[in-house]
Length: 428
Image 1 (tube, one colour):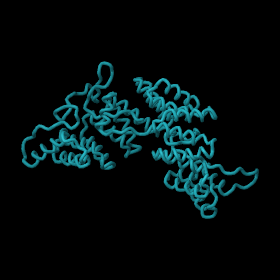
Image 2 (tube, rainbow, N blue to C red; image 1 turned 135 degrees about the horizontal axis):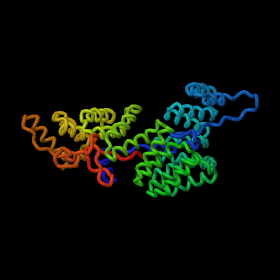
Image 3 (cartoon, rainbow, N blue to C red; image 1 turned 30 degrees about the vertical axis):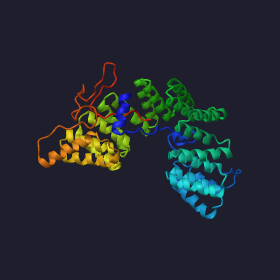
Image 4 (tube, one colour; image 1 turned 90 degrees about the vertical axis):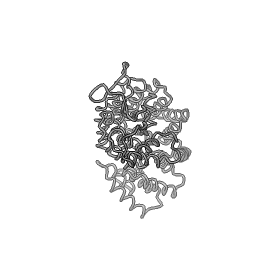
């Protein structure tokens, strides 16, 4: 793991989300899995045979199969003009806009609801969930806390507070809130999964397994919990169980990219570069701008010495993330050492230096390589010795050869050995 962590730091690979619905502030219902959720507004019940209220009629559009989201948004927008003093109209519009995928517009609608009724717990809880999804933890906590002070029975808001505290590293508070939720509704799966994540963060892996299995007992098709369980097994060095759980999650939700990335990272971690490439290409086919997937694909191709393809991947990353200094540095290394294109190597090393700015170490080997490359280009001299930019060796290239056709290499205990490819850790 130390090697993996070092590679993460060196190659700028960041882990992504867990793919767990509760991470993004989801409602507690099983149908919310995998998507940031706000509470569905409750229309007033109508007597038998009585026509639906305008708000109820608009909400009914969302209960169709498939939901008529666009129709509901249009209907609620019409109602805002006719009945803007009705808080339920703004709550309904916020919910419809959230289903449409427009979080910013949804939050604006919920704020309008607060303008109408400053003590609307539903509006506060929904804004808190959206702030949580955006990663604004302090704002989320403030809004959710106000919601629970107004409505102590809002279990979704309390659970989302537990998520906020977990993400802030306040683990005792996280567990306390989720246990309070479970006291009132013991059959909810999401609080058990969040408690499992707390134990996972604390490296209490046995307790994490127990909590996650409880969540799966309550909701057997809880793909996000299966993904987290896979991560726990990976930390316990139970590779087969880890991959099994990732794949089970993908059977339930083939679109759960966190699980797909985790499967790929296991292949990469054990230097099965061809297997890693196959999984990362599945990510790339669905989400071509997923940076974690592109970085992993680049590492898998690097391990197979497919450097022209590595070049294309790194260029795609820089197009999506022009300020990624680490990838600029790696691309310079590819051009310098493997593709033998000194002008391009110089260009991307300079990009790296410009992005690093005053924070660059005076002893950074890139600075020496820039000087050497300039002399080569300007003077037409024979190639001079350059300095490694990745820290694995002192000659600017890797010396250990892989043991198989796809570049796989393992120590006697099955652990990965130091190889040529930039590695990334599991997603979580």
